[in-house]
Image (cartoon, rainbow, N blue to C red):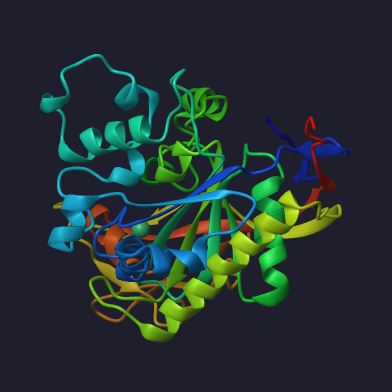
Amino acid sequence: MLVVICLVCEILILPSKLHHDPVRSLCISGGTHGNELNGVYLVKNWLKSESRRCEIQRNSFQTHVVLTNLRATEQCVRFTDVDLNRQITPENLFSTEEKGSYPYEIQRARDLYSQFQDGAGEKAVDFWFDLHNTTANTGPFFIMNHTQGPFPLHLASHLRIKFPEIRIMLLTPGHFEKLHFGESEDKEWKQDQAISKFPTGSVSNIGKEGFTLEMGPLPNGILNASMFNLEKDIISGVLDTVDEFNNGKEFEGKEIEVFRFLGVVHYPTDENNEITAMISPDLDGNDWKPLHPGDPLFMAFNGETTVYKEHNVVWPVFINEAAYFRNNIAMAVTRKEKIVVPALKLKATQP
Ligand SMILES: [Zn+2]
């Protein structure tokens, strides 16, 4: 379902009365990035035995579990050839070229899509839930694509009752790294993607609807027990909420706070593309806090501070994320907004 963004008031407007089909199947995936270990080990544990899988089974829907990037997980690296979380695209999934000629993660994207499609070649999983960790000081947050209907937003918002520290990030269709803050490139391409079934190329696009759970700060390649347990509790809360909805729970219409992705900020570089500054110590670790014009942004190696020079307040996130360093990306920036989401009821099913 497409939603409309009112450019004047910057509020997401959705139709006022909505119904949603029951969720019959849900997939939890981990290891999309093979060195984000809490998600990897949650999934590995559920895959080990039927008894451990009990904790993610609910009566009203079927739960699948999958380790997505097998090779990267074995090697404890983000990816081996290309980032799997950018490969769920129509060009990759429906190409007729020989499979063997593709990079590993594109082959894996095709295998995953085949595994979770129905006989007619359409998406078979109703809701996809992909687990990630970030090295940034973000706490837990859900990332979802803004062209989806209100169901993922209601789920995420409902989880905030029990876990108020959870935040919601709305991702603009298109590849994360391609959207440079302050530029308007790729506009046409973005609109094309917005109406496709694979708006962001991410693994959660394998499901009809879905979102990503990010948890940070967690360094790559290690586990953290308290974060692992919190992650498990949040997952359990999502499953319970889906189950309650399937059993007739209604989501009331409400205003929800979201952080809308605006683009990424690159490190300053010299003529050899070598970075010349670090994140300012005044900003580092302050994910989700407002950055005002004139606030410190970078600190050069000689100690000089560069300030944020744009005119609008932004809310940075993924500050100093290790995986983005190789692309000279210092952080993403978002805009905090309130969006109005209408009530949502279960669609009546045939007896
Ligand atoms: Zn990740």
